[in-house]
Every structure is written in structure tokens, then in C-alpha cells.
Image (cartoon, rainbow, N blue to C red; front, side, top):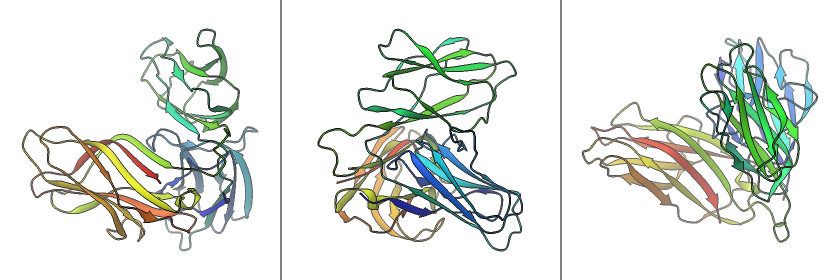
Length: 339
């Protein structure tokens, strides 16, 4: 499969750009910066479906942070499900800089997950990576951590004997890489205060018979999202997705989640759109599904086949539209592109 070269969405005002789905990309990533800057531009990664973000950090400690107009090329080893650009202190910038990402395709299917963090001191539940997780991993911790706190990531071959492989002692240490081969992961908490989120991504291994390319791209978001209006269609989530990396020339999109609402019936609609302009209600409608309620109900739909795009990435938007009295509410959504 080909390499991916993607110009990331760069905001000029303060805030974050449209995320790019990087779950089908390999560990080595090159970031190129060129153009003006007033404050800071930060390239962030997320491994929990896009809820928790932190700056990319290479194993030598270099951060994906740009503060001067000098052109820069930086290399990072990272397994992250999504990347985006955050602008800090650049309000008033008339011309946005260019920040591009280059990466090879993943050699195997990466593993992404959120580790169980106990609410008090002690060890969390064990996460079984299975037999197809590679050695290189990236961990992201977000949350308020009091001084003197320790969160140890432990690895094990047999699920019984665990050893520390990486340590977090404060928040915002970045999306931190680590190379170690294990089957099981768990968190050892030695801290009080609120419970942070610790998410990880692990590279996959190349297995016999899987060298034809990536077969699917999955986007997960376990948060609850809803429209602000009960009548208008609104963009709920949007991503840049490298569909050109998929091995099949014909693709389908599958949306699954849980519709939420009161005990009365409703007729709210969710749509998946491809193409168009970020934040706008345009682009081709790949699928549309109606949530009739009442209460919490499964929402699932599969699109008709469509031709695999040839562009490096495709803008994908999930929209919701209320029925005039109820907002469109969905949580625990998964969007999968597959043959």
C-alpha cells in the first residue's frame, strides 16, 4: 500500500483543527512545518476515540511544538488513532502555516484501548492485548494529578508477573512512546485526587496472509454528543480519513451507537457525509439512519457500496437532526469503513 502524505487542518484562531484519522498508519511519522506563527502550533494525538489529547513526543523527548517561522522537519515514532493541530496565541494571523504529516501504512492492525484506572491506590483490571500486538506502544494520560502522584504502566507476558514499563508523575507529559513486548497491561495507581484517563495504542504485527493492505478503518467515540437545536441538521463530529489506504476498491460505511432520549417516541436522524467543506452541511450522504426511540435504543446502519476515494484523505462528517421537539443524541458511536 502507498505512503500517506496529508496536509493537516491548521486553524488561525485559538483552538483545534479537524482531526485526521491515523489508525491505519505505521509508527514512523514525519511532520513538516512551514509558514508564519505568532504563538504556538502543537500537533496532538489521541488514542481513546478523540476525547483525550496530548502533544506528540518522540522517544528522545522532542515535542511536536512549533513556535518560530523557521521551516522544520521533525520525525516521531508514535502509534495514535487520531492527530490534529492546536493553535495557541495565533489569533489575528492573516495567513495560516502549512503543517503536513507523512507516514507509511501500518504493517499490521494496531490495537487501541483505554486502561482501567482504579479510583484509589492499587492495581486496575488487566487488559489483554492478544497475540497480534507489536512491541511499540504510545500512552496518553490526561487528568489532574496532585504533586507526588505516580501512575505506573505495567506489562506482563503471562498475566501474573507484572513489571513497570513507563511512569507518569504529572499531567501533560505528552503522548509518550515505549518499546516493550507483552501480552497484558495494567495500571498501578499510587495517587489520590480525581481519576485520569490513560489510553494507549500498540502497533500490530504482520501476519501471514495479511500483506495485501489495510482492510478497514474504525473510528470510535465513547462520549455522548447531541445537537443544540431540535430542528436543524448539525455537524456532530468530523474527521479526515485516509480511505485510499484500504485494500478494497469498493467500500461500505457502518455506523453503530446508542440513541438517547426521553420515554416518548421521536424521529431524529443521523447522517454520514463524505466530502464538502469542514463544518458545512454538504458532501455526499453515505448513509442515513432514523432513531425512533423511546429511551435508549441501538442505532445501526450500513451504507450502499461506494468507490474507494483516491485522495490522501476524505472529509467525513457525522451529522444529527432533531424532529422538532427532540434533539438528536448519540453515544458510544463507532464508524467503520470496510469492504
